[in-house]
Image 1 (cartoon, helix red, strand yellow):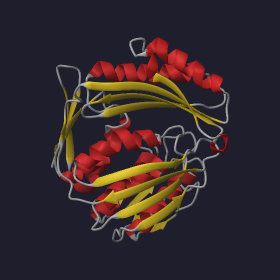
Image 2 (cartoon, helix red, strand yellow):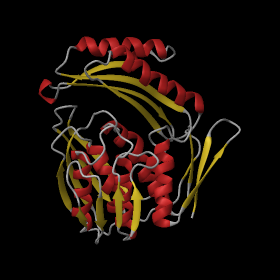
Image 3 (cartoon, helix red, strand yellow):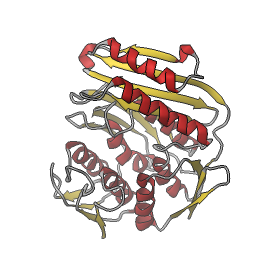
Image 4 (cartoon, rainbow, N blue to C red):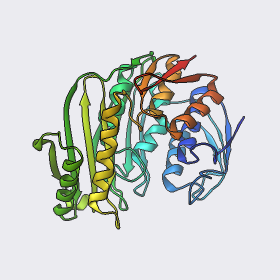
Length: 339
């Protein structure tokens, strides 16, 4: 039994998701206390409960203390069983973060699986569907499994109601080297609006153009989705390279000016472009778990985040696998698996 202090490191829901995945992958029970102790509102939220419930369902696991607001749970894994599963968050809680909890265990199962997950697809503090589809999954698929995802319906905060479908064909994980991102193939900035004035999108795009002046005029586009899927707004800043695609996102909310949202996202993309690293700030921690179970591999990244360091520490506690992070002369950081 591993005892985890949920307030340490990143101190949020990531600790829960990684602990559940690692427990299923290693058949190791755990107890976590002080859940989300580093957050303004500690304890389990609805999306965390759904993610843990999903882990219980696919892994035949038992979990005590599982309730919204709970500060402590004990999780005892069973056997991972592939199949067709449907999970609904019931709020705008992230569908992508529920997927993050169960993806690697199902990728290493002995038969294919199909997932339907309902909730938020474009919401604060979580990767949007587009990042999962075009940034994360291409890297996962290089490791052996075949994972595809489809966006059926957008889901924004606070309404939710989005739907994604994911097909997983397992295969043994193999190490990959993700050092160079290769030549740039294209760039785009997409402002998505649903049930709100299109002027919001136009203001976001004007601001993004000022921050990314070298990007072509045709790269800045507005996308309107049906009003019944809103109200909501998302900005996706995307740069496609030969070996990786980076997507930086921003999400509209009351009180947040469109200009500030766009400037923040565009500046983050400018920082990534200046680094020449393979993995951006949101991909880096999501690469650690599959690489650990591939027993090897390496990637370059921008400055390691607290999310990444927390994930690496948790993986080491469950598996003994360590990661070496070293600074390179070109300003990039090299992350290597030490099996």
